[in-house]
Length: 244
Image (cartoon, rainbow, N blue to C red; front, side, top):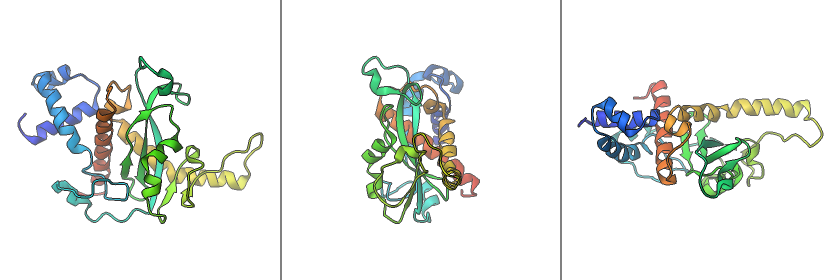
């Protein structure tokens, strides 16, 4: 258990499954206290190793050798945004703020940004209580303000009303009327363009620690797990593209 590879394996197994520290310790042949310590130390190392340097990246200097994989990353031209709900157990206090009417359950929500061309995640926002609207959460990240005006933004109807001319949003159906055929076709084309982020979110949620009912109480810890899952999803994309 002393090699970094074994430590990393323990952290990935923790993310990929929902089993507790005790059972994970039995599988790895170590005690649960050691597993907890390893996960706590290693998981944060996976937070930003495979997130490309863009205007959404707060940490500009990278020190890990694996980051050399991304040294030639091109400038971001199209960013796709989407909000994703993370189911949680019913909280004991202030339940209505965590209740998502769309999902009909208690959730926490995070906004993710993906590069339309490479399919890599370029941003993951800290989780908020599930009642928050997609537009409001994105505004609180400041990403829309930080991104250069040349970067096109793609989103769904949850981002209607965002400031700027760079947004590409679907047409909203008028109340009591149907969309014209032209607008319907435009919406279908738009959906095909932004499906990248939908598939990408699925690659994050295969890590069951954040994809199934989240038992982590701390938002800071959940953010670490979510960021690590997004970066492992990026690593998978990079490997499929023949990098590394």
